[in-house]
Image (cartoon, rainbow, N blue to C red; front, side, top):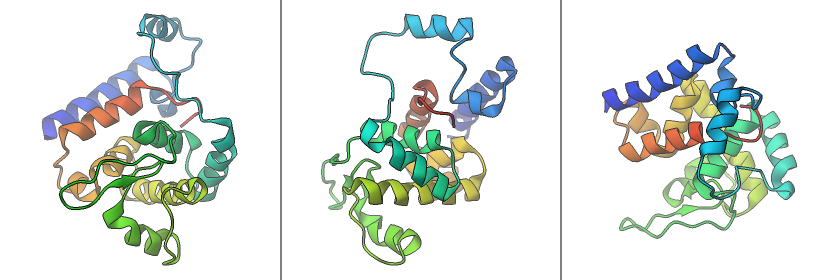
Length: 188
């Protein structure tokens, strides 16, 4: 798995070094670059780009500012997890857990999230405002742990333990590539 992780980060480094631009352009390249425009024109038609729904835009901005993170990081996760759907639910697994809400919080860890980010008060992962603020604080915590956005996204998807043990599942690599490939509409 170390090899896969190294390939993903090598890919990001190549993008960075070849662009001659600041790090944030790995996530949000400027649309005035001819190569970027050409790549976009060649992409197959699909769902609309990750535009934050108007009713959530202010919440994302405020929660990101509250947590001290770029709004694009939070938007990227919400898009990858649920396509901004606050009612999203994964199927229940054998261990009776499921992922809930726009940020797909695992039901097994709701108490941990509440203790860490909500003064022990239980929260509803299906409540958009609560979920956005809890997710923003969790992303901040992950950034403080790792200091690199790639590791933050991997830890959000695969878990802190998987990143710490360097046991990244293939699904998390695909998740990371999806985040880097499908650019957010704001800056990271």
